[in-house]
Image (cartoon, rainbow, N blue to C red):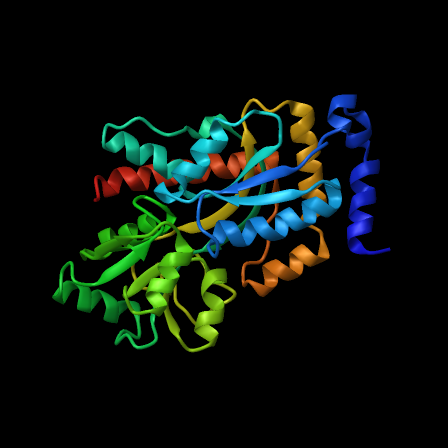
Length: 325
C-alpha cells in the first residue's frame, strides 16, 4: 500500500473522523482553496503547494492554491479573514501575520484584519531567516557588510516582500541592532525580490533557506548570516547574528495553515486530521526536503501557543523599530 493510500485510510477510519457529525463527515464536498498572500516562489507558496497536493489526495477533493499578493501578505490575509467560515477558504500564512496589524496601528490606520480572526490548523515549517547577497558583492562576512553600511549610510539597497513583511522586519531588526541605515526596496513578495537580487538590482535580502538553496548552489548568491538561534542545517557554515555579537537579532519565517475563526469545530477537526496525515505524506516530505525547508509540524493546540509567543515577540520588535517608510 502506498504512503498516500495508508494516510487516506488512517484519515477516514480514525476515531476522530468516526465521531464527527454527518455534516463534517461530508466535508469537503467541493474544492478547497488555500490562499497565499504572496506571488509564486516565496516561502508561503513553497509550503502551500505540497500541502495542497497531499490534502487533495487525502480529502479526495481539489485543493487549489490561489496567490493574492500585496501589502506584505495583508491582502491575502484580509481576504481570508472575511471569507465564509466553512472550511473551504484557508490561509497559508507567514510570521508577518501578527506584524501587519501592529504596523498599521503605528501609522494610525485601521488594521486589515486581526490575528484573532483566524483559527490555527497546523504549523508546517519554521526556518531561520538568512542574509543573502549577490555572489559579485564584496562582502564575505556580517562584519564586512556592517562596516560598508556604516561607511555609506542609506546607500545599500535591500529587498523585501513589502513594508513590515517578514523580510522587512528581519532586516530592520538587524539594522537597528547594528546601528546601520539601509535603503529599503519593497516588492510584492519574496519571489520578485529574489529575482531582483539575482539581477543585481538590489544588494541584500533576508530570505528563508529554501528559496535560496538552488541559487547558492549555482554560485549566483552568497549567504552571510543567519537569524536563527542555531545555524541553519542547510547552511551549517554560515554564522548566526547572535554569534556575530547581536544577541537580540533572531527571526524565523514560519508557514502555517489557518481558517477563519468562526469555522465550525467539526470542520476544523477534519482539517486538522487531514493535515496530520498530510504532514506524513512521502511526496510532501520529499518536496520540503528538496526545497531546503524541512517540515516542522505542530497540531492546532501547539501551533496556537507557538503563534501567541511568536506574535508577542514580533509585535515588540515592530514597536522598537517604529515607523519605517
